[in-house]
Length: 215
Image (cartoon, rainbow, N blue to C red; front, side, top):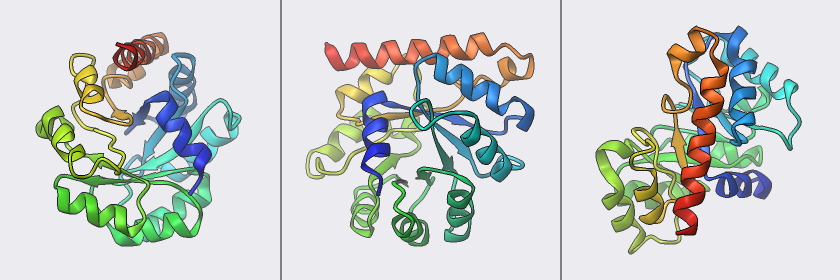
């Protein structure tokens, strides 16, 4: 596990999710996210040419500028391939022991998808560094808060349905960070080359997280 990577996720409080973006636009998209103040970015493994995309994005920024991870990692084989391509952390939609084992073998943090307390315990005991509460929009902040009662030692990262309207509630409920997809990486904005809009989205979330943490 990389303490530096997990510390950065906690510090930023946001993992921006890049899904289905054209490879040619990936670097510009990530640069816009970075300019907006978010330094941890997840590129989903179900994106076409994801390995080349991870390599290219990783090579375009220093480790201080951007930490690139792989998302929607479903099995150990995909986990290994994305790590070898340069992914610094792995994110899953569900618990797969092979992914966690591979992440630990390569010293990379894993954020493992869970939707029940039992899954959270199983993932954490298997070696996951954080659990991704997914889908957060359905489960809601109340679930995150309730989970933190008996399982407060397990860091939670609500993902899926997190917006500017509810991000404060998730942090008030005890979230360590949040995963944010289309609310930052607007597919229409990417398609029309409006990277300033993505930068503005990222900056808005950074401000909302800072406000949630200080009030």
